[in-house]
Amino acid sequence: MLAFEQTGVATFSYTKQEAPVYLPFLRSADLVVCAEDAVPKDSKKVLLLSQKLLDGIFALAPQQEDGGRFLASDMPLRIQCTSGATGRVKRMVRTAQVNEFRIWQYQNKEGYNCYSHYLLTHPFSVQAIYGRANACIRMGGACVSVASDVFQAITDYGVTHLAVLPTMLAKAAAALPAGFLKPNILMIPTFGAPVSRELRERILQTLATELIESYGTNEVGSVCTIGSDGTGLVVAGVRGEVVDKNNKPLIG
Image 1 (cartoon, rainbow, N blue to C red):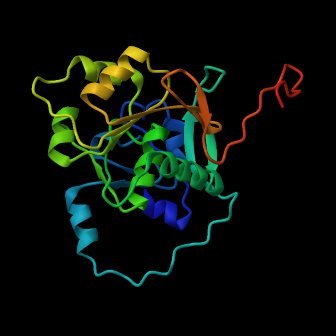
Image 2: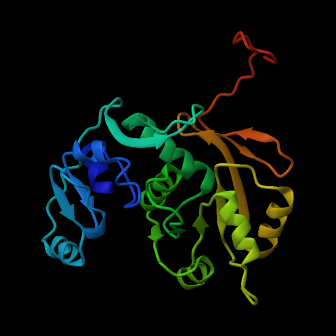
């Protein structure tokens, strides 16, 4: 994914369960990179991801870096799905400028660095996951993708960051194993819905050292973080304004 982004190739992620839904779109793609059990029918060109392929790539002698391709700010770089306010699934394009801004937002508010270990809790088809993984790796951190349960992964790999929906957070609180040792550092950003005060307090007592609730949309990205009292704090790079139905400012 980083290689495609570096060279200005627009990407789109899907899960094998979603392949039939996006079939017309996937057929039009110049290249589909996927596992053997997720190949869409009648695609132009398919590259199967396998251990043999990866071993062959990493066995190649490193080439001299050319610095990458210059990306114009309006170049299409990422295609994502959203239902937005319409409730109807649609695809939208993120330009290089928008993509860079979203990734910078994650870096700015969630503090990724070269010691960060980010646990992937959802596939890259969830844009909040793709962006955070990118933000972590760019800062020199590592991404963790394992099939074991979340608590075991946190312990085994020294996870410092993971992003989840509040429903998953509630399940984690209910399933916390006896004797689980709370990490010294574990930041949990949530997205998609608010977290109740009770759940927030429980997670901070038993699992997370910091919990960040974000409010935003696929169309505009993160707008603000939400404090424990429900008050929103506008994030860096965003200007908020309260207007009436005629788009006139209400409070300056």
